Length: 259
Length: 326
Picture 1 (cartoon, rainbow over the protein chains, first blue to last red):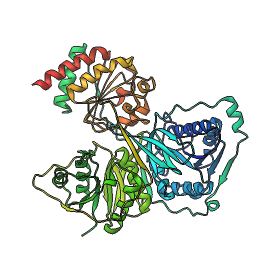
Picture 2: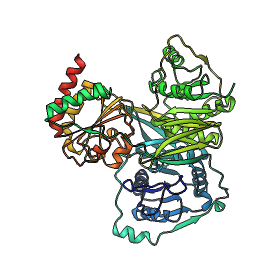
Picture 3: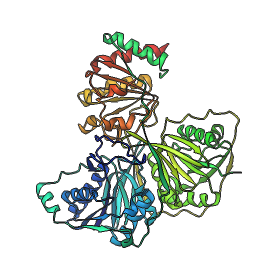
C-alpha cells in the first residue's frame, strides 16, 4: 500500500516571532523550524500501517522554500521512504486553496491509496488543507482521527473521529484522506541509523510546471499582522489563603463581574 | 437587496441550534443588518429550534432536512450547501468553530473556489470587503485577512462575539429548497459516547478551570471537579498533565488541544507555557493560582494568588458556595 503524508514546516512554538518589515509576514532569521506536531502523528501512523502490513511505501510531501528540506529530511529519518518538495517561488503567497491544489496534483501523479495529514499546522492554524484536498480529489475525508484500521484487502479504512462528546466511527472506501488528531499515536524519535539512512533517500524537487498547474493569485490574502493588544496589568492578591480567597471571590463578583 | 450573510447552524444533534449560534447570528446582523439567513443541514429540525433562530435575528431559514445529513459527512454537506450557494449567491458564509464546522466550511470553500478565514475573532467591513482578524503563531500575533471574491467564508471562535438578544415574537421565514439527492462514499458505523463528567463541554463553557503539573497526580482532579460543579465550570488540563497521563487528551487546553475563550478562566498549578497560552489567552478574565511567583501565567493573569493550590481550592469552593447560595 502506498501512503502519502503531507507535512508543513512551522516555527517552534517557543520561538519568538517578530513582524517583518513588510508588515505581513514574520522575520525568519533566528527562527527554529520544526515539523508541525500534528503532521508527526500523521507520519507515525503511516509508518505503523506500512509496518503492520509488512509492505508498502510512505512518501512525505511538503510545500515551501529551501529550508523545508530539513523538515522532509526528519520525516525520512523517522522512516519515510522518499520525499517530494514542492519548491517554487510561484507558491510563495500560497493560501490553503493554492496549497491544496498543488498537493492534489502531486497526489494524482503518485496515486496513493491513502493520504494522511495533520489536523492543522500550528503556524496559521487554518486547518483547511485536508478537507480542501479531499474536495479537489473527490475523495471522502475524516477529520481529527483518534484511531484507524485498514481492512485486510486494503479496500477501506475504519476511522474514529473526535467530536464534542465522543467518537464517531465511519468506514471510508480507499482512496481517502485522514487528518490526525493528538492521541492517535506517540510519534517515534529517529534512530541514529534512521538519520544516517535519511541522507541517502531521495527528496525530489517539483515545480508548478512539473505538475501541469499554474499558481493562481490567492483567494485569501494577509492585509497585515498585528501584535496582541496588551492585557491590562494584573493584580496579585496578598494575604493568607482564606483572606486572599475571600478577596478574589469579591473581586470576581464585583469588579470583574465574571461570576 | 444585497446578498445575504449565511449562518451555518450548529445544532445539538437533537433538533435544536446550539447557543453559540446567537453569537454567529449576532455578529452577522452587525455586519449585514436585515440580511441574515440561517442555513441548517439536519436530519430533523424542531419547531422550537426554528423559532429560536428567528428570535435571534435570522430573517430567513434555509432548511435542508434529510436523513443523509446526520451524522455529518463533509462530502454530503458540501455538495448540498454548494448547490444552494450557487443558486442563492450569499455574500458571506459564517459558522462557529466546532470540529465538524471547521472541516465542512473548508471543504465548501474549496468547492466554491473562495478563501477561508478559520477561527476568526473580529470582523470589519472595509470599503466593499470583509476583513477578518484571526490569531496566528500560537496566538502570539493577530493576522488581518481579506478575500479576493465572495462568498467570504469564515468560522468564528466561540465566546468572543457578543450574542444576539433573543426577541420574543420575531420570526424567520422557513424555506425548504429542493436539492439533488445526496450521495455518500463514507458510511457511518457507530458513535461512542464519552463517560460524561456532568460538567459543561470545554469549548462551550463560560467558565473553565484548568489543572496543570501542580495537580501532582490524576487523583487530585476531583477537587477541581467539585469546584466545577459549584460554579458550573468545565474542567480542563495543561499539556504537561495530559502528557503525564493524568487526564485524557480531550481535556487538553492549548495548541495541540482545545482552544477556549471563556468569560472566566481559573488556572491551578498551571505554569503558563506558550503552547497553553495559545489555547486560552483570549479568555476574558484570567485567574492564576500557583506556588511559583515566577510562573509565566502571572504575566497575563488579571488576578493571581501565589499559594499552594491544595489550600486554595477547598477555600475557593467554600466561598463560591456561600456566594451562590445567597
